[in-house]
Length: 234
Image 1 (cartoon, one colour):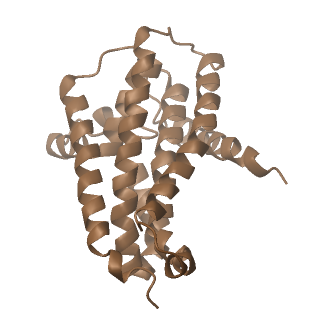
Image 2 (tube, rainbow, N blue to C red):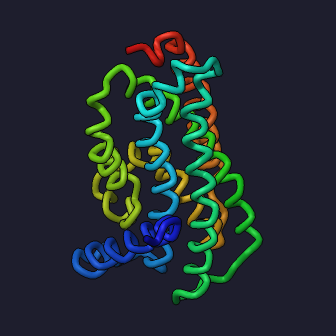
């Protein structure tokens, strides 16, 4: 009945649920400046990649009849999934900005807010590579789609969406160092620094984001392209 309104309601309700469970009950908000804004950015940006992940995994099988009927570059299938998710993400991004602007404590907006555009661009390129990679894997192993939500949940917990990785893992420096190379942690930290805290992100973090995005896009596309002749077969 609500149609496209769920594009906004879904992440908003997720924010409320995570805030109640992790912020209030489990107390992960301790030590996190502006925890609500921290959580809003984490949920909205993570769901953009999570939808591209699950959509890419089933892209070939859900479009098998079209692939058999028409001749076109097969990479258009997973890429179109990411484009559709991007178009859904843009209006939800506006909702996220409004939430950050009206929910206290209100942060001071700086010029760094424009840096969120390259963050979104890098994340979108990353999502394209991820969707292409998983589209072929999902085609070869159809049962993997049943694990998509579980894998997405593990990634959610390991990306610092609703708690600070730096604070929670400070006693485990090796684990913390490994977690800091998580691409979603990188994207979320860059977005939070731009939109929420108004501080400069380390150049090394930008470099890691670029390497993840371009590297996965190239690897994912080549891997998908090498299996193009097998797509659409019974």
